[in-house]
Image 1 (cartoon, rainbow over the protein chains, first blue to last red):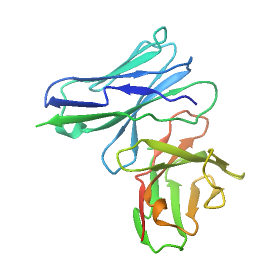
Image 2: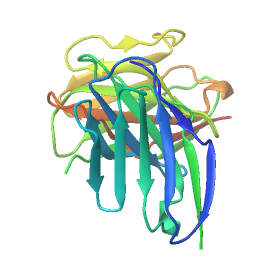
Image 3: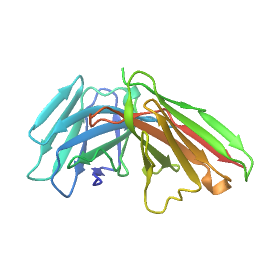
Length: 111
Length: 115
C-alpha cells in the first residue's frame, strides 16, 4: 500500500467557513478513502472515491479526485466545532486492502 | 452498521506483565483485521494484518513474539502484548474489513500504560 501526504498539516478556521484539505500520492490507485479521527478515538470512514470518479458528495463533504495530478481534495462546507479532528487520506491500489496513513491534517474549527 | 468494538478501552499494567486486547466486529464478519499503534501526535502505524484461521502478517520491525495476534473467529481478533515495558505504552487501534469490501472500520482504540 502507499501512503498519502496530506496538506496542510494544520488548518484553523471559524465555524461556518469551509475547510479544504488536500492529499497527494505517488502511484496509480484503484480508490482513495478519507477518514476522520477525533482526539483519542479510532478512525471514522468518511468517503471512498474510485479512480474512475472525479467527484463525490456525502452530506457536507465533497471529495474530488484528479488521477492525472495524483491528488485528491476534501471540502467540508459550513464547518462546525464538532468537525475538529485529524483527517487522513488513504490511497489504495491493486487488490490489497491494507492502508497506510500519513500525518494527516489537523483541523480546528473555532466557535 | 459496521461497528467494531475494542476491550478494554484503557489498561494500566506493571512492567513485565502481559496484556490482551480484544477487537470484535459486532454486526459483520471480518476475514481480515488490522492492528495499529499510535503514539501521541503521530499517525497510525500498521503493526500487523490478521487473517481468520491463519497466521498474522507482521510489518517490518514489529516483533511477532512480543505482539501475539490470534484471529480465531470471523468476529474476533486479539492482540497480546507480552512482557510489556514502558516503551510499549501507546494507543492501540484495530480495524476490520467486511467480506471483500475495501473500507476499514475502526475500533475506538485501547490506551495502554505500562508502569
